[in-house]
Length: 327
Ligand SMILES: O=c1ccn([C@@H]2O[C@H](COP(=O)(O)OP(=O)(O)O[C@H]3O[C@H](CO)[C@H](O)[C@H](O)[C@H]3O)[C@@H](O)[C@H]2O)c(=O)[nH]1
Image (tube, rainbow, N blue to C red; front, top):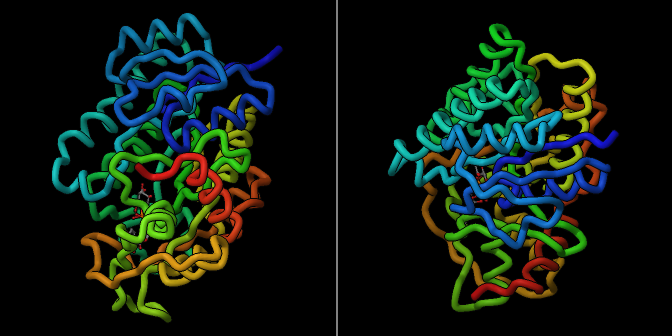
């Protein structure tokens, strides 16, 4: 029989790519999203329940209607800078929202959850590559709002037999290679879409935020992981939860770091055009280097990145931007 996944935040960037991957793998997919930051037209692989995760009655009704085998939980606010300026909305949407979701799940007898966590929970790393035993010490409310949820999931596992997998993404990047869905944030603050925009719109130059980091070329290094590789990890983690439950944490990255200058070079190479580039000061709270060890996900889930070569990431992001040019 077909399994069902309820995807909170399924109208957003990572959530919509995961909806497609679950649907392609033969799951029934139901999206639950309040559309505050997601896009109605990204919901293509099953029904949309327009509901906020803090609306317990609404979430419970959706769980009772669709009886999902699994909840994949992406609904969250995810701008680091915004979380520093207005932490209350992060603790409210992300942390309290997840508590409400988990309570609704317990009431509805739904006991498996995949949680979209973040490398921001590590703060400024003491060493790289970062494995899951690296101490967690967030340096912004966004990271804290997610780390507290990981803690709740551990406690809920012990007390209520709720099983969970927390997936700590490094830099989600790239778009659906078929061009059906992509990365769309309002406002856009992420490096790859902005560097691509600078190719198309010379009046919107790309600013390298920091050229004095302790890295070989002075710009910050990140581990860019294709959103489809993230989606595949969710499928494997979902199958593992259905098969044997438990409480698990995995890093999802490639083990390869790319500096901002290398990223700009890749955009030049793949697009055949020069983005207009400026040098600017560091953005507050940006660590110099974030690179994952994915050995645990490889060992326990059998996962490894397959589509995360930087040129492929840029190619898929360019294809999406061709079809959805910046306004
Ligand atoms: O205009 C820009 C935008 C970004 N960058 C740099 O490019 C790198 C990547 O920046 P992104 O904004 O694309 O990504 P972040 O690493 O800041 O953010 C990612 O990690 C965060 C946690 O640290 C959150 O999880 C967030 O949602 C996720 O995209 C950083 O070094 C940043 O300083 C620039 O040089 N210029």
